[in-house]
Length: 258
Image 1 (cartoon, rainbow, N blue to C red):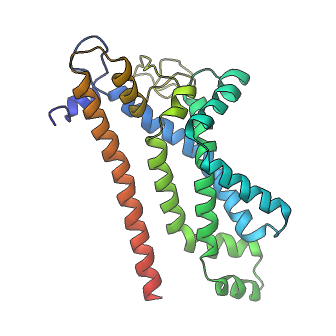
Image 2 (cartoon, rainbow, N blue to C red):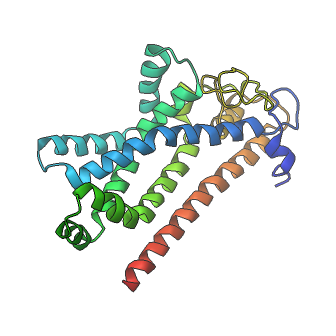
């Protein structure tokens, strides 16, 4: 595919003339994913540990697990509308990377929490019992023995969640917007609205760019730009999927040798 070139990956898009790229959209996708993980990882990590090691088996944990299953089954457009009403309108964040990151964090929490909980539950209980028998506190056993052993599976869940975030479209349209604002890559001050690191600027991602080109694109090479963008997005998701499968394979080999 001729459009898959360094020029295509680094230049700005153009909605009037042919020959535009996806440089800003690619950066927006990566930065939005980073913001989403920055918000969701601490919450999911703590919730997964609590559900697997500390939560009593009662009505509260039943409601929490049921809520997570319901949230994971919601269409992304519903989550996007929720983010639009809460973060964009109610909290007045506007169409921004921060609003998109908060919304995608809610969207990604069920997967990350469940993967963390299952990974910790899969660790042999003998290790927990041995640590407690030595007089080590439960938290120290979890922190220094259980979590390190479960880390490969937790990382696998994070990688799969990352691939899901990068390919998301509907929720991003309603929260991060569908315009690629001009950014100055020489300005790295997060408080500047023209800075690529500013979390309060709107951000069109690669997935949204594909949708926009196919619905509103009037440039002569719209089909080629759309195909090239889709190929880049496919390679990104495929990369995370391959890495996750490699992690799973390593984990299975390790379990087979134990």
